[in-house]
Image 1 (cartoon, each protein chain N blue to C red):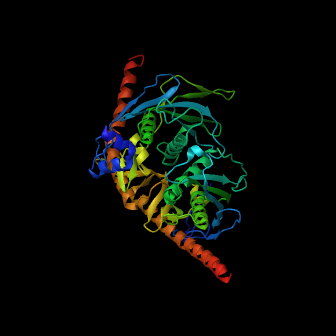
Image 2: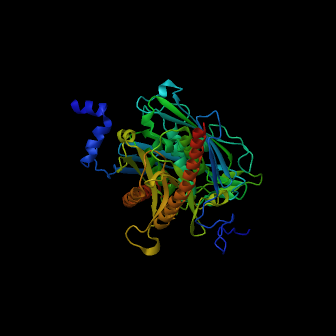
Image 3: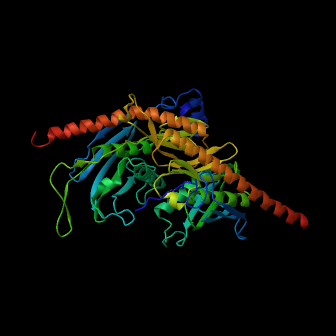
Amino acid sequence: MSRLDFISLAGLRPDGRRAKEIRRIRCRLGVLREADGSAYLEMGQTKVIAIVKGPHEVSRRSDMLIDKAIVNCEFNLAPFAGSDRRKRRPTDRKTVEMAMSIKAVFEGAVMLELYPRTQIDLYIHLIQTDGGQLPASINAASLALTDAGISMRDMVVSCSAGHVDGQAVMDLNHMEQSHGGAYVPLAILPRGSEILLAKMEARLPLDIFQEVLATALEACRQVHAIMRGEVREHHAALLAAQLAL
Amino acid sequence: MEVEAFQKLDPQTFYRKFLSEGVRPDGRGLQEVRDVAVSCGVLTAPHVAASALVTLGDTKVVTGITLQVGQPSQAEPGCGDVEVSVHLTPLCSSMFSVGRPSEQAQALEALIRDVLTASRPFRREDLLIEARRFAWRLCIDMYCLSYEGNAADAALLSVAACLLRLRLPPTVITPDGEVLVAEGEGTPLPVSHVPLPLTFGVFEGALVADPSLLEEDLVAAALTVVQSLDEGKGGSGGGGAARVCAVHKAGGACVAPALLARALALGRSHAQRVLPVLRGAAASAAAAAAATAPGT
């Protein structure tokens, strides 16, 4: 068996990126007419649609909180999303974990106290996956919430970093993520670089962990620049349409 | 009476007043961890390969590892499997009910599984009996006996204590393709490092180590850091260099990167205190087993 080089002599990764380069991000707000907020986002080959409904009346009265809104998240990985066709039930372990993580992130970011006695639903549909499922889902949900006009402390942005071939790299794809090295998904509020979510389970020396973390933070900032540009453009278009009326 | 009413009516302010004085309602300092006690080999049934009871203050968990022979998955024909189930039942707290595992139990299972499979305290290749055909499947069952907050640390410590005592029995493969467990001592599972956890609650930008049940409801986020110490290897004397095995911060309130660095430093010094406790428990269990073994 030949060992795969994750970073070639020229310093390029298998998909042609440099170590400190994120994948192409394309995103659009307001892709669905029926939803209160929606967004479509691509990070490389990972493609997500996020839909927001709410704030609306709490569907199960016993869940209602009198001083703030509750967040409900459903995560759905399409059977055709990965390389092997596989249908997952909503109680599948990975699905539940993913939904829990996304929910926890937005419980920290949305200003829930502005919407007491209500519920905000997040539906995430991953339609194609090539690594970085969690960051892509969080970014899409963040844009959908922005589209729905729900107040957040700041726009949540997320990206991963990892450590392959002795280098800290940004935004891992599926191959790099599954080879067994470090994979650190990070979600931040970019204004103060405050960490909402960080996960890491590989064994790394402290200084390398700090380096990977710094790389992930920088990757998040790059993602933020792109997402902010898209939000501005979208709203400029909306404003122009309104002025034309 | 007035104090109790205050605590019930406005727990946040109650807690804030305590923290501003640098002390917590149970009398601990902000970074003080409750007493940790570990005992290994508490379950004596013959099919339990390793077990440990960990008490962290009033939180008690017992973990048992049983071994099953399974077939390695096609994706990893050279590795054994690890299965984790966490049981948070009404036994330990009225918060939990019978039936499907709660979200908290599932999150804890995921954390333990990720720490074991990704930070690799042992090589899953060592669980192999015969490539593609047989491998040991590690079934880790954790029961919480009393839930007084911070089950994550207690659970991870108990799993670590079990690993230190785990022996894989010798096996014989019969001609008709069955695995029989042979008589004998078995070989200890090589454990390269011991993952040592410390969980913090984040309350208005301050870290409180090892949150109690009361505090778990009040803090805005939880942050778990798992680290290992290099023991002896590399010749460094006191403690040695730590490695980060896992960082887990799932949503909730924000944490500045500086606070994360501080949590790592605190976790490291805590790890240095806890590791001797774990090693001591494993050693005394080994001594007890040797004393009761037949033929001595």
